[in-house]
Image (tube, one colour):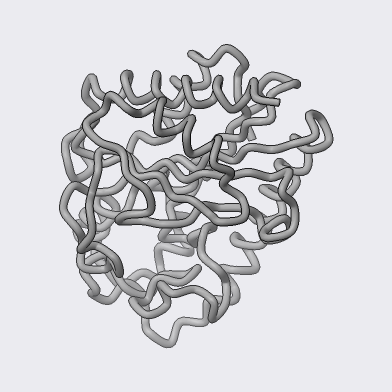
Length: 258
């Protein structure tokens, strides 16, 4: 957790920016080193931690940041850890067994529970505590989930046939109030097109609060990677600073709302 201003309700959540995989977890992945690097290029939301960092520095009131230090190939903290997760259909539940191109990542009979217990549950608890901290301090919490996605659909995508705008906003019927969506549409209006829930829908709220506490609002910001970097896994370009400024505008708009 990277602290922000005491009176900011905003929590920038960056779950998929890291490429780090502990050695003992790496041992359970069947890809050779070159293939793993290529997979990380495709699956990692490269530079999103930097986008959040720059946005935090530009915002009038610094938001709090919760940045995952491990790759989503260790565990994906945004998946349901059980049969509710639709991505299980392509081997991408909380613990992935398939790659972005539907090849083998781990043995199909891999028991996910050890990784869920070691990494997923502590992450979920820490994120719940971060949200509770904003509620205690300000009476509300605004979780802005910062992601990126490729310009062209990858084979693992279940809903890749729809529009792929420069910025996709993922919403939740319970946790995304209209004013939050409106603020995001305004903040990203100048980036080449903004859409809702395509190709990725929904947003992240800790299960402790999900569907129960309207004081917790949430929005997913999915940035198309060709707007700020060379795909896949390449360096950032000048678009990163512009997008960070848009994110800072959103943070200011929702952070100051009563």
